[in-house]
Length: 183
Image 1 (cartoon, one colour):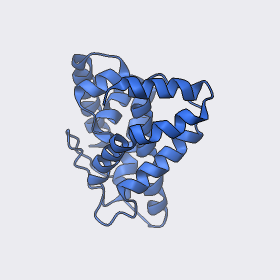
Image 2 (spheres, one colour):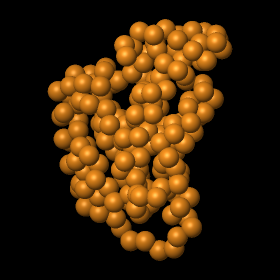
Image 3 (spheres, helix red, strand yellow):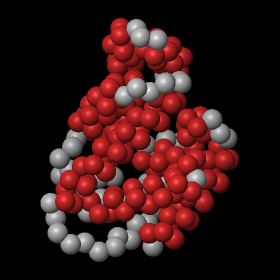
Image 4 (tube, one colour):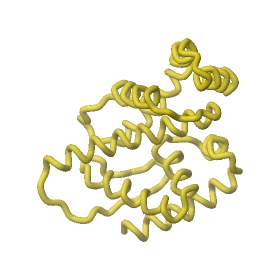
């Protein structure tokens, strides 16, 4: 799918055309579903959210948000971040029902092999990502888009308007920083 129809619909929506939102959903639904499914593959077995639930919750939040949409890449970047926050909120709720918990060791590579059966793992990663964002917002966004949303280097580069080489450098730095923070 090219970015042109999505960008055009986002522009219409931003200008107040409510019909554009109705037209947007069928255009982006399948791709958002794939992002949600990729993200849910890394979650614990028996997770109470299904990819469709995650997608619908994220879409509901996106529709209500007052965001100055720029283009297709921006829309999917915001959607990926929204999905991450939903899963973090879900993990927080689950962790709040549990007692105890020690520090969590998290290893990062392209497949995000987190032991997501433990909500503390996701929370530790989320908190570390927030600290990284305080130091370098772009590196945190690169890591979030690549690992959480499953975007390729080229897709991540397009979403952030940087080169694939910059994405590679930022990811290497961010992974090393997170390893030190969490390990």
